[in-house]
Length: 427
View 1 (cartoon, rainbow, N blue to C red):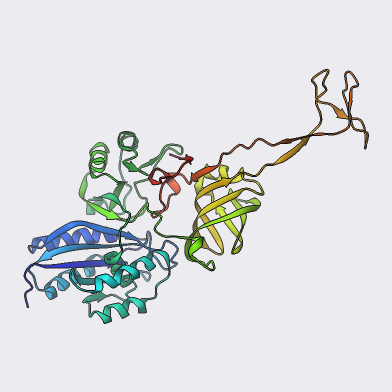
View 2: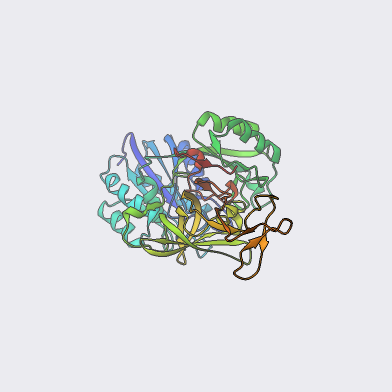
């Protein structure tokens, strides 16, 4: 049966691998082929980042969905999508298990998918949960191999974007896939200079790196992130690269902190989740490789937090923390350790230090006069009984600190987007 003017969501996930491909690129190919059949894309396609700690993810754990209006039979659309996925997904990779879901826009499943999607961003979801929803609402779908992509496919359709950003993704010509990307580094710094903060995380000024150009062997040439479509396009016009094959702007939950669970919402901590935790620093140490750790006392017990080497200058902030400092940490938990994305220094402890007294006559530091004999001035012999107790000056301030752009995770909200006081932004 032909459904005139049908509005249909298509969600897709897990078509890439560490060897290549990108689900966003495959979605763009699908949109192009569907438009050839007379279908119309409605709004921006959605790039939805799911729980970043999931161990069986491919790369960025991003799923894609888009809404079309079509006069074609839904069976024809399913067949066309199947053909594109079979032609381009990395099905030979053991860890690639694609899934595609088709949901009509007026299907009551949409209401149920919102809660499912939010859980997919913050928690761990089984494939059985996805299959249950598909069965409950009899949703047309395509399952390849294990079909774990069905989870992301559903979530990408259902997630409520109460906060969102945009990303302009530019793609390479197919003959360039897998080769070294060619681009003018300075042009990306120029684009950032002219469009920041309406665009962000294009470059890392302190570490002199372009961070929006990936190193993986996929079709993406670069991705410019921001909140303003005009700024995205301005940056796009400024950057200089190898020839671009195509580009697409996605609406996304990137840079929203949507993955973080506040400590007031939970009764216990679990691995493979991401948290905002408050606690008092009780220990600090560093291990070989430049990884810096603190241990904080929280309502859930002692929690280890890590600033790993790739976070570069952010580690210097963590190094300057002392026992007694009250902090709020933001990050994902793996192996019972929070991988720090941001830290809010709520209160700096007063650290008291003792010093030999100053001679009131000579203004010089006194020396010990011997065991239990106090202190005396070497020059004029003036004596004093006790040391001076003073507060140690702290080299850091209270407020928010974040990892630099080079170490930013997809979902982590940069401070430039946060309406908080005392922001210390690393650019």
